Amino acid sequence: MRAEHDEPGAAGRPAEPEPQRGPEPERTPGQPERTPGQAERAPEQGQGQGARAGAAKSRRFPSVTEGTVRPEGSGRAVPGAVSTPARQWPMLSVLAATAAGLLTTATGHPRVGCLMIGIALIAAAALRRFLPSVGMLAVRSRFTDMITYGLLGVAITLLALVMEPNPTLDIPFLESAVRFTVR
Image (cartoon, rainbow, N blue to C red; front, side, top):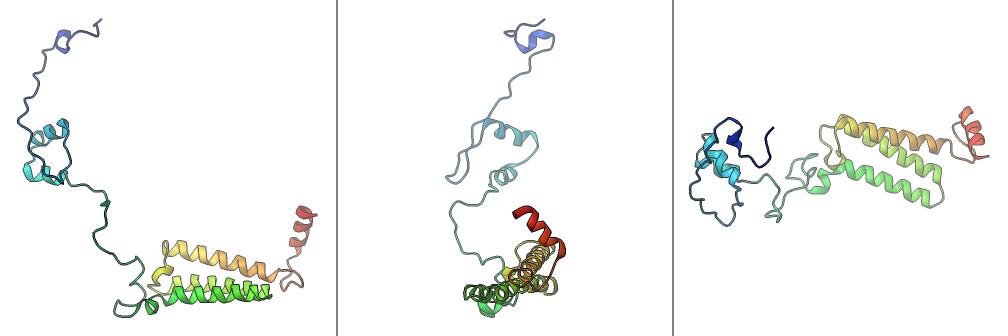
C-alpha cells in the first residue's frame, strides 16, 4: 500500500523528468493569453508557429459589430436591384390580408374577419410551398413553415365557420362536447 505523500517514482517506476520550457513568446495586444498546457502541446504535435497562430483565433462572434449585414430574407424573393417592399411582396400580402381581417373583426363582423385571417394563413402556406423564394415569409424550414401556416389557417377558418350565432358549419359532436365541458 502506497502512502499519499510518496513520490511517483517510489512505486517501482522511475520518475519522469519535468519537460523544460523555453521562454514564453511575447503576446500582441489582440492575442489571448496562453496557458502553459497550450504552449506545450503545439511543439509535441509537430505544429509550427503558423498553426499556433491559427489556434489562437477565436470562433466567437465579435463583441462589437464592425459592419452592417443585410437581413436574412432581404434578397430572397426578388433580386437586389429591386426595392425592399417589392422583394418582400409575399410577406406584405399576407400581412395586408391579416390586417384587413383584424379590421373587419374590429368593425363588428367577426366571422368574415376570422375567415380572412384563416385564408391569409392558408395562402401563406401555399406561397411557401410553390414559390422558390418568399423573403421574410420563410422563418423555418419549408416543411415546418407549410405545416405551421396551414394548420393555423385551417384551425382559424374552421373556428370562424362554427362561430355562434347561426354557424355555417354544423359539427354534431361539437355541441355535445361543449355541453359536457361547459354546462
